[in-house]
Amino acid sequence: MTLTIRPAGIPDFPDLTDLLMVSAQSRQAADPDLWRLAPFAWEKTFATIKAAMEAEKPLFRQQWLLVEAGGALVRPA
Figure (cartoon, rainbow, N blue to C red):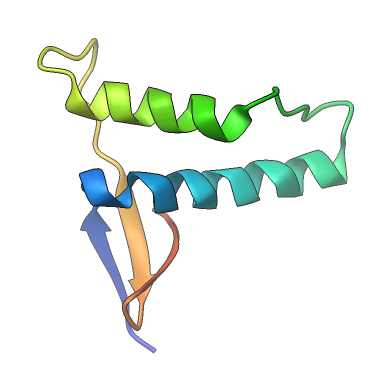
């Protein structure tokens, strides 16, 4: 199976948010006292990514990279 890395685009934001939430939920399951998820964590994460990536003058330059295998997203790079 070939892995490819590519920049995330606006249409990827929901899937990127899903992947980040899976990672966060895994950490929370391992240690719920250390890794608490805020209410509406998915919505807040999505809004933050969207705002940062679409800003005309962001506070700092960002680029999210995604790993794909067989055309399916696997994880953020």
